[in-house]
Image 1: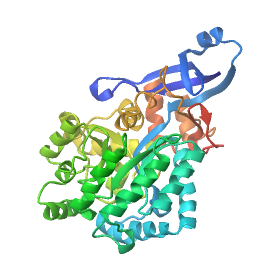
Image 2: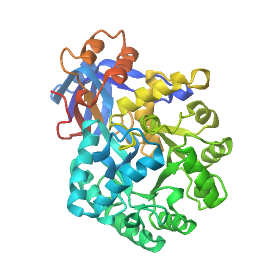
Image 3: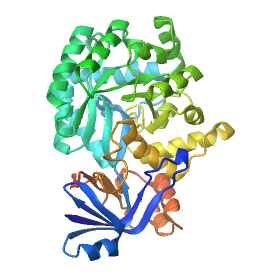
Length: 430
């Protein structure tokens, strides 16, 4: 057993329903075989377990590992393609890079860059948009398995309106996806996701094939894009003669294991349908701003009872850090004034951790640092004299310290990361 000591902060109770930050300034977390057995004042836990190894994480903050609910594996090397709306950015930046993953040697390097980027940002669990090429997805699963991350991902499929080399057929997409799922679904911490790129690039036959694959892989997840860009939305309506959300629903693709990215421009009918199906939305605020997609209507999602979590959306998003995404989410709602949702530090931490775990069906395992949960955690320990270090030392309490972490924290402040109680390779910091 190992006893971790530090200032522990999490948000297990939903702040959208009245929950608050939970914090202990000098806490002890007793961990055995990756599971938290006890949590309490360090002196009390130590008195009961005087002989166990102590890992002293005093200074900084011990937080749950972040849960990223929307991030693109093939796009890690093109972050920063600014100045274009979604469809132009796809054509000029994202899709040419994604085509390069047909080269397995290139894909292997991208996979290492990608999983390393997640770990260094304190992200321990992620729902990942894979590649359009099955060998590249295989390499991603293998890299995640070596690193120790909890990854849910799969083959991305399209059969129209993209570069020719990124297209497949419904039959081949199903066969390739099933082969990947048989290799990786439930292997280690990996799980399989069925991923049509978006309705714009998928025919009804392709979406039907996705439903068939979900039926053939018990416990698989579903993810895609939804209502991100106004031009995209209009084109989808012309192609299907129904709303964007309905394109998925009429193929029975929406349910509690479905996570849809963006949903910047939903109608009330879309929100009612998502809530009725129990689907979740991944809010990607940096990407929405960078591509000028629009402003996320958080308040309307909350009013309709739609579950929301955070996604970095690398590479339209501007980095892996969910600290940055939380801050951008806060800015966005502030700028909306009365139409915005007044987010607090508790909301930001919950969105980046427990809400993501719930969206991915992992709330019984990760997302907070309660007794019985897996020890997926990160230690934010800024360099001495840095702005965050100064701010944390002078914070008036845990809520203020958490606000400073989101306002000032970066990947460089993530000193160490654990999954199942096992420390990953150093994740930044001095």
